[in-house]
Length: 189
Image (cartoon, rainbow, N blue to C red; front, side, top):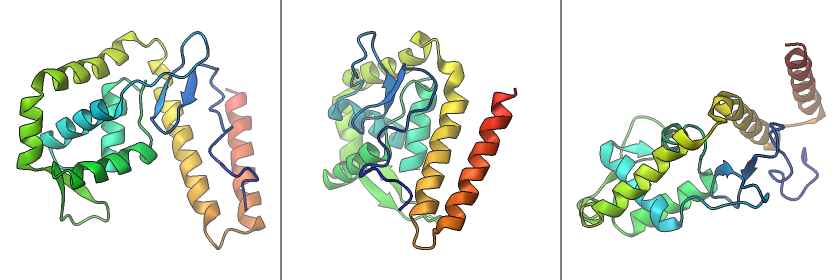
Protein backbone atom coordinates (compact mmCIF):
# COMPACT_ATOMS: atom_id res chain seq x y z
CA UNK A 1 0.00 0.00 0.00
CA UNK A 2 1.29 3.44 -0.90
CA UNK A 3 0.23 5.16 2.35
CA UNK A 4 1.48 3.79 5.64
CA UNK A 5 -1.04 5.77 7.66
CA UNK A 6 -4.39 4.11 8.32
CA UNK A 7 -6.02 7.39 7.25
CA UNK A 8 -4.00 8.51 4.20
CA UNK A 9 -5.67 11.92 3.96
CA UNK A 10 -4.55 12.97 7.42
CA UNK A 11 -1.27 14.77 7.81
CA UNK A 12 -1.01 15.69 4.14
CA UNK A 13 -1.03 19.46 4.42
CA UNK A 14 -0.83 21.80 1.49
CA UNK A 15 2.39 23.38 2.62
CA UNK A 16 0.90 26.84 2.26
CA UNK A 17 1.04 27.86 5.88
CA UNK A 18 -0.98 27.02 8.92
CA UNK A 19 -4.04 28.92 7.77
CA UNK A 20 -5.62 26.07 5.78
CA UNK A 21 -7.19 22.98 7.21
CA UNK A 22 -9.39 20.12 6.17
CA UNK A 23 -11.92 19.98 8.96
CA UNK A 24 -13.74 16.78 9.75
CA UNK A 25 -15.09 16.26 6.24
CA UNK A 26 -16.91 19.58 6.18
CA UNK A 27 -14.55 21.13 3.68
CA UNK A 28 -11.53 23.33 3.66
CA UNK A 29 -11.87 26.50 5.66
CA UNK A 30 -9.70 29.19 7.13
CA UNK A 31 -8.53 28.46 10.61
CA UNK A 32 -9.03 31.01 13.36
CA UNK A 33 -6.20 32.69 15.24
CA UNK A 34 -6.37 30.13 18.02
CA UNK A 35 -5.57 27.36 15.53
CA UNK A 36 -8.93 25.62 16.03
CA UNK A 37 -11.10 24.54 13.16
CA UNK A 38 -14.35 26.31 12.59
CA UNK A 39 -17.35 24.78 10.95
CA UNK A 40 -18.61 27.28 8.41
CA UNK A 41 -21.96 25.67 7.60
CA UNK A 42 -24.04 23.21 9.58
CA UNK A 43 -25.90 20.39 7.85
CA UNK A 44 -29.12 22.38 7.35
CA UNK A 45 -27.23 25.31 5.82
CA UNK A 46 -25.29 23.05 3.47
CA UNK A 47 -28.53 21.37 2.38
CA UNK A 48 -29.98 24.80 1.56
CA UNK A 49 -26.90 25.75 -0.46
CA UNK A 50 -27.06 22.50 -2.42
CA UNK A 51 -30.80 22.86 -3.05
CA UNK A 52 -30.35 26.45 -4.26
CA UNK A 53 -27.58 25.45 -6.67
CA UNK A 54 -29.51 22.43 -7.93
CA UNK A 55 -32.58 24.66 -8.33
CA UNK A 56 -30.55 26.81 -10.74
CA UNK A 57 -29.68 23.78 -12.90
CA UNK A 58 -29.21 20.01 -12.50
CA UNK A 59 -25.76 19.29 -11.11
CA UNK A 60 -23.51 16.45 -10.01
CA UNK A 61 -21.53 16.33 -6.77
CA UNK A 62 -18.18 17.49 -8.14
CA UNK A 63 -19.86 20.40 -9.92
CA UNK A 64 -21.48 21.42 -6.63
CA UNK A 65 -18.13 21.34 -4.82
CA UNK A 66 -16.53 23.52 -7.51
CA UNK A 67 -19.43 25.98 -7.55
CA UNK A 68 -19.40 26.38 -3.77
CA UNK A 69 -15.64 26.90 -3.83
CA UNK A 70 -16.03 29.51 -6.57
CA UNK A 71 -18.85 31.33 -4.78
CA UNK A 72 -16.72 31.51 -1.62
CA UNK A 73 -13.67 32.78 -3.50
CA UNK A 74 -11.84 29.54 -2.73
CA UNK A 75 -12.24 29.89 1.02
CA UNK A 76 -14.64 26.97 1.44
CA UNK A 77 -14.79 23.72 -0.49
CA UNK A 78 -16.93 20.99 1.03
CA UNK A 79 -15.39 17.56 0.80
CA UNK A 80 -16.91 14.73 -1.23
CA UNK A 81 -17.34 12.93 2.11
CA UNK A 82 -19.89 15.56 3.09
CA UNK A 83 -21.45 16.39 -0.30
CA UNK A 84 -22.40 12.89 -1.42
CA UNK A 85 -24.08 11.79 1.84
CA UNK A 86 -25.94 15.14 1.89
CA UNK A 87 -27.13 14.56 -1.68
CA UNK A 88 -28.30 11.09 -0.66
CA UNK A 89 -30.16 12.61 2.28
CA UNK A 90 -31.82 15.22 0.07
CA UNK A 91 -32.89 12.47 -2.35
CA UNK A 92 -34.28 10.38 0.52
CA UNK A 93 -36.18 13.46 1.73
CA UNK A 94 -37.70 13.76 -1.76
CA UNK A 95 -36.20 17.21 -2.37
CA UNK A 96 -33.94 16.18 -5.27
CA UNK A 97 -33.95 13.32 -7.73
CA UNK A 98 -31.40 11.75 -10.02
CA UNK A 99 -31.75 12.67 -13.67
CA UNK A 100 -30.59 10.58 -16.60
CA UNK A 101 -27.59 12.05 -18.40
CA UNK A 102 -25.16 10.91 -21.05
CA UNK A 103 -22.16 11.16 -18.74
CA UNK A 104 -21.11 8.74 -16.03
CA UNK A 105 -21.76 11.13 -13.15
CA UNK A 106 -25.08 11.23 -11.35
CA UNK A 107 -26.83 14.54 -11.81
CA UNK A 108 -29.56 15.75 -9.54
CA UNK A 109 -32.52 18.01 -10.23
CA UNK A 110 -34.76 19.68 -7.68
CA UNK A 111 -38.23 18.22 -7.09
CA UNK A 112 -41.46 20.08 -6.37
CA UNK A 113 -40.95 19.25 -2.69
CA UNK A 114 -37.44 20.74 -2.82
CA UNK A 115 -38.70 23.91 -4.48
CA UNK A 116 -41.44 24.21 -1.87
CA UNK A 117 -38.88 23.81 0.91
CA UNK A 118 -36.73 26.57 -0.58
CA UNK A 119 -39.73 28.86 -0.96
CA UNK A 120 -40.78 28.32 2.67
CA UNK A 121 -37.25 29.07 3.84
CA UNK A 122 -36.38 31.84 1.37
CA UNK A 123 -34.97 34.21 4.05
CA UNK A 124 -32.73 31.51 5.54
CA UNK A 125 -31.58 30.48 2.05
CA UNK A 126 -30.70 34.08 1.16
CA UNK A 127 -28.84 34.47 4.46
CA UNK A 128 -26.71 31.35 3.95
CA UNK A 129 -25.96 32.26 0.31
CA UNK A 130 -24.95 35.75 1.42
CA UNK A 131 -22.68 34.25 4.07
CA UNK A 132 -21.09 32.06 1.39
CA UNK A 133 -20.40 34.99 -0.92
CA UNK A 134 -19.14 37.13 1.98
CA UNK A 135 -16.34 34.61 2.55
CA UNK A 136 -14.77 35.65 -0.76
CA UNK A 137 -14.82 39.34 0.16
CA UNK A 138 -13.41 38.73 3.65
CA UNK A 139 -10.54 36.44 2.72
CA UNK A 140 -7.13 37.88 1.91
CA UNK A 141 -5.67 34.58 0.68
CA UNK A 142 -8.07 33.87 -2.18
CA UNK A 143 -5.17 34.26 -4.60
CA UNK A 144 -3.94 30.82 -3.47
CA UNK A 145 -7.05 29.13 -4.80
CA UNK A 146 -5.51 27.77 -8.05
CA UNK A 147 -2.59 26.24 -6.16
CA UNK A 148 -4.84 24.65 -3.56
CA UNK A 149 -7.12 23.28 -6.28
CA UNK A 150 -4.13 21.83 -8.14
CA UNK A 151 -2.79 20.21 -4.96
CA UNK A 152 -6.20 18.75 -4.16
CA UNK A 153 -6.37 17.38 -7.70
CA UNK A 154 -2.89 15.86 -7.40
CA UNK A 155 -3.75 14.23 -4.08
CA UNK A 156 -6.98 12.82 -5.49
CA UNK A 157 -5.28 11.44 -8.60
CA UNK A 158 -2.51 9.87 -6.52
CA UNK A 159 -4.96 8.18 -4.17
CA UNK A 160 -7.04 6.87 -7.06
CA UNK A 161 -4.16 5.76 -9.27
CA UNK A 162 -2.01 4.20 -6.57
CA UNK A 163 -4.82 2.46 -4.75
CA UNK A 164 -5.78 0.38 -7.77
CA UNK A 165 -4.73 -3.26 -7.81
CA UNK A 166 -2.18 -2.62 -10.56
CA UNK A 167 -0.22 -0.03 -8.57
CA UNK A 168 3.19 -1.55 -8.01
CA UNK A 169 6.52 -0.16 -6.87
CA UNK A 170 7.40 0.89 -10.42
CA UNK A 171 4.32 3.13 -10.56
CA UNK A 172 4.99 4.46 -7.07
CA UNK A 173 8.60 5.34 -7.94
CA UNK A 174 7.55 6.94 -11.23
CA UNK A 175 4.92 9.09 -9.49
CA UNK A 176 7.42 10.05 -6.79
CA UNK A 177 9.98 11.10 -9.41
CA UNK A 178 7.38 13.29 -11.17
CA UNK A 179 6.40 14.98 -7.92
CA UNK A 180 10.03 15.53 -6.91
CA UNK A 181 10.79 16.99 -10.34
CA UNK A 182 7.83 19.38 -10.10
CA UNK A 183 8.91 20.43 -6.59
CA UNK A 184 12.42 21.25 -7.82
CA UNK A 185 11.07 23.29 -10.74
CA UNK A 186 8.73 25.25 -8.43
CA UNK A 187 11.56 25.86 -6.00
CA UNK A 188 13.55 27.49 -8.83
CA UNK A 189 10.74 29.90 -9.79
